[in-house]
Image 1 (cartoon, one colour):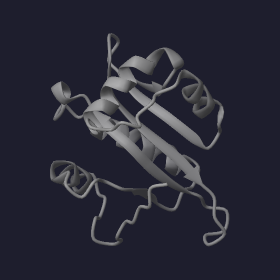
Image 2 (tube, one colour):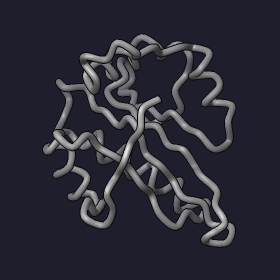
Image 3 (cartoon, one colour):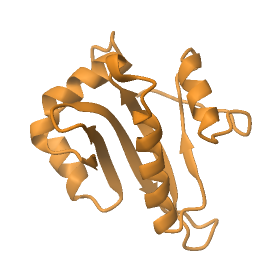
Length: 142
């Protein structure tokens, strides 16, 4: 089942994020931040919960803009599936859930960034219809 994360999911989210960024010294999952995301109508932290454990997660941010009238766009971040449960359609279900929500609010596109070395993830995103050739992503860490 896919649902919004709750503060009690903190430790399992931390474990998933550790799989995504194993060497991060800045990672800090806070219950208060999970609550803050949950109460914000434009930000979502979804989890795939099999009833006994959280096996995947994705963050969705809805962004408004002036270019496409009233149509917002979605930004997907931090999609991760537990390393022992990959290739079981969990990531696909999470992305489909995000896409259905974005369609329901008339988004004109969904964007995501992926670390340039995560080639297996890139193949997955391309299978799901995301085109890695239409844009080039840039980041500046502060």
